[in-house]
Image 1 (spheres, rainbow over the protein chains, first blue to last red):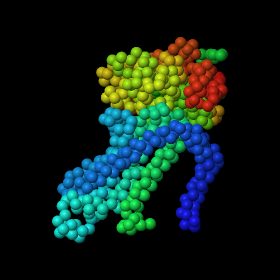
Image 2: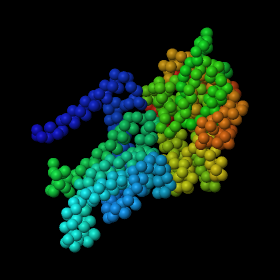
Image 3: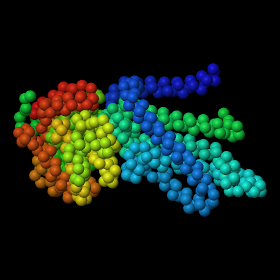
Length: 258
Length: 314
């Protein structure tokens, strides 16, 4: 019980203090609700538009998770491919860096032209945003495979496929999990940003469309509610990745023993 | 409803003149273009200076919220949409309208000229159609309320490249903007104006916050006089101002400026302005808008509209 309290109490107290500060600032500075709604107003918006927010959240969550999964699988494969030879790495790594640099808000409208409205373009944009940390960390993890282990596999006559599957991938797993943690947060950002220009609107709106719409109608309380929920989606995905990482690594890697 | 007289002064002139120009900022809600032609005309003709105003014209951009900047006091004046005034005030704002440039709503739904759609009803009923629009905006909600059907057209995010690529059958537009740009690119379009459906709010409205109006009524009056003279000048001869706005907004050529300027004239001048003057407003129109917005659930209640605008000493 003490252990549980010592884990839960500090963040709970900080959160409570934050809520009190937020409410106090609004009252003390007489801030209008369209500039900064109070925590209670945000909660009321969540209650009043619960159906709309729930439907929007499910749409965004689906696109986020799908985009994250595609980014994860393709990212690991691409990272592994770059790890096959220095030649390939030098040739292909710079173009993959483009994925990190490209401003999504600028190209998202083109995704709609290429892939159509809704889920396809949102997933595409999510993959573009989330894939780079997975590639980079997979490559880094593979490159960090101890040389003596590689030598052992070579002496035992292991082929390229066996070396990758039984040595490089397990060795790179901690780094891959770190990349996936970063990609989890980026996936939500990518999906929401893409939905600003690619989502359906009205009663088919995902969270991104809802956020844009609430800005234009000065419904800052609804906007905050949608933003908090989208952050929650990010936390959830991050938590799942953490859990998977712990399950994979707990028996043999110090980074996830606790 | 008593309609007030024809002078352009919304508040009594103060006695005496202050030699130091009053420095104020006017926040636009988009880039320099004919929608703001009268403002830039006033600047070029020295009208602002003649009224004792040192006006910094701040162009808008995507993401800039002119109503909030004015209501929060970051700027003294702003140009906003008529619906936005009611919506912001319903959420705790206190904006007051001083001059309505557009007497009629410039929004519409644009389709390609060869699309086959004859009216909004047909378009909204077509299950194969996707319409790019900001569905939360008042005019879209009004059209959807009037013509929306189950399993009809799908509303998607506004995205002009998608309309050009043909993945969208229709898109919302500002009649002086998108159709003009496409016409000059050789793409024929047709616009179903939303004001034809009866939803016809004022647009491009000069606003200030009530506290500023109470503290500086003469400055506000001077601004309105400058707006009036600026717009009168621009409507007579827009060429020089268009050239200047094209320099400030290179994305719009002088040719586009000229075409846009000609398209907006019926929105600015009408039978009412010929009686009451450019920029005039009536309580009737504001009340009609407020009732529509309440019906659309965009505001919680109809306000006392007489408090929301100043025209003819009100």
